[in-house]
Image 1 (cartoon, rainbow, N blue to C red):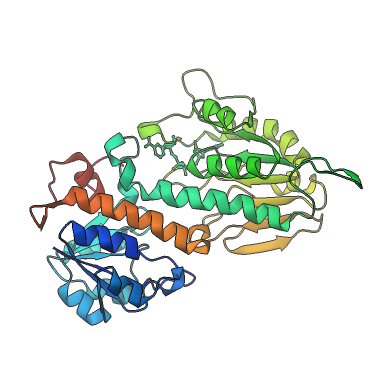
Image 2 (image 1 turned 60 degrees about the horizontal axis):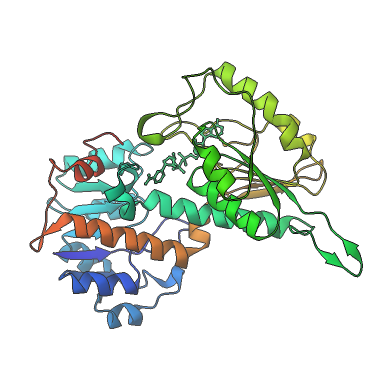
Length: 368
Ligand code: NAD
């Protein structure tokens, strides 16, 4: 099997699907590896390092001509998608829920697609392939650092000759993979952290990181937000309003608020209104990790945009946080791909077995 990692072309995308360490592992497993020239430069990996690890550095034309499987991070642009041919397999975070036309077009032309976003999250044997988890962990870590950077006071309680500072009060909304990593990072910096999630099961995880789990009015017993595959379901409008009112007081008192709440395939829930941001102290910082073209968790946030609001609150609409830590994010993503290829390659062939639960889901045939 020949796999080829392309250079990502999306604006601002610095990650790369394979890193040299992953090339070594794939070569050891008997795969041939192609790398598009310059593919790793955004993540500080040189063509020479890939070649030393056993990859062949090639032009895009050569890569598309020779690869059985094309490896990418984000979905390809129309030109790259057009270069794929029947019988080839495209593997990446293809976002089929957001861009259904891309996958339809490719499968219509006989290109097989493997969307890592469709991995069954709760299967333990799929954990090593879980790219959504590895990338969300990077995003959560970076979100806490961004907040600390733009906050003009200390996170920890510091005692110096000039007196004692009080620790920052950090609130994390949404305690999934990114939220938990943000909690852990803010805690390591010495902040006092509280968190909230609609999934009651997250309480134990929050508390084990030394943060307080907020008790706000929950949906009626038996209808709590735990659903298919451990994901949250969308709350009703009424439930959302009750939750928001209870959270508002906590938000207004916090120095830092980091929101990470998502419901797969849906618009992110609005958790922080402009009115409550106005109640926050000047100098406070809000990071919306869910900021998207569809809106985010914070009213008025926009992806990749940081604004200081009239009330003195800095609002950061996160964009591509994993890409902002491209080396760590690419290294983790490449490990996920190595695990995935270990699952898919049998006897030197790419074996996309529709009867396999993981493979079927990744090809869009199973529950996600
Ligand atoms: P996500 O990115 O889809 O959402 C982030 C968090 O936001 C989730 O915890 C969700 O419950 C929460 N949320 C949604 N609506 C909310 C609201 N209105 N208010 C507050 N919080 C809200 O989630 P994720 O990080 O991808 O994780 C999804 C699930 O998968 C979690 O249960 C996670 O623990 C689980 N998971 C399991 C494994 C595994 O078992 N191998 C691996 C990764 C994730």
